[in-house]
Image (cartoon, rainbow, N blue to C red; front, top):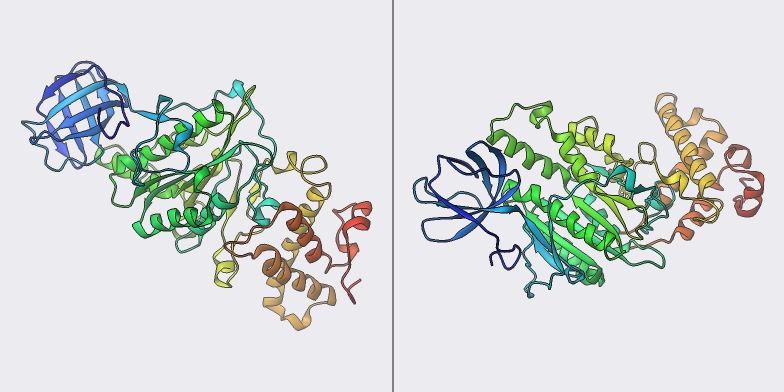
Length: 469
């Protein structure tokens, strides 16, 4: 047994001596036929074992990346054992409420959990023919998401952020507040390449709010090897698949920061001497990200689901950068954080116009959320878009040249941002409260400016402000 029971003992073949060491990677030749992603154990001169993963396999040779680095390994005396199995992770319901490192070892001071079984960490994307259409929502407690960009069970909905924006705070708030009515629900919180103080913030936030018992945390710190950062989300998704598809739970997987994951992938690719593609990232970045994102969803005949909320920081706030660009092709929408809103003290600074949930329209409305939800969300979006146009016009001609109606729209825009978008780090609003607040804000405008809402809806929910009817 090795690494605190994280892996099983296998039949093995031993070899002594390496051909080449390059950073965290070594090359060994004159070996039997080994397989891609096969587990390897490396024993240094002092007899201390380390784990490695085969990155490339050919006839008589293998390229292996060592999880804890190659420092202290010698070309002549290092012993290599090929386990003839992929890396396996132990899974059970006992992993809930626990904190693990990037390789799956407990770091919370408690004994390792009892595992029901061991599963391949690499997993597979859900077969399209077995997929069920995502349905029913997950309430995050954040109005700008629940009302405007609803998160649906089985959906992949990334958060596009930037350096210095509060995406870590938003991610922990969603993990604390997310709910699924009347169903078993849990969260896999995955952090890759984060600083130690950020990791402590995550754990402390879950402990103090009392939700840790339904959260499993995987932490791969900034000083962790690159291969560990690429392995961590696969460990979490393997655990999520077990809980969702064998224990019928609804699992929300929050992964931060996918940009760190992609940087680790680029680093490994560079060490291997692969020909780079856009911005130096490997040409297989798209398929690698798809291999992670497509593990979310629902399966026909299975009650549970996996919902993904990957968080990524866009370099220089560039939404056309390869990471957000390729992520947008694979996922079903995006939530975009806006620096200008953040600069004005609005939290969460979720941009109203570029944010989108493509599965929202089929999962809101009468019998699903509330009858007025689709019309209200559409009208809020349309009115806020007009506010942006009026603000641009005012910057050219001045506010004093605007019409009284334009000033009403500007007032609506200010209240929409300060009352509807803005809410505290520990404030949880129910969907009902969010919809009611949306009606309060939009009632600043006259009925004639709300063409997307039917008359019967207006009679029921619209309450014009004094002196504004």
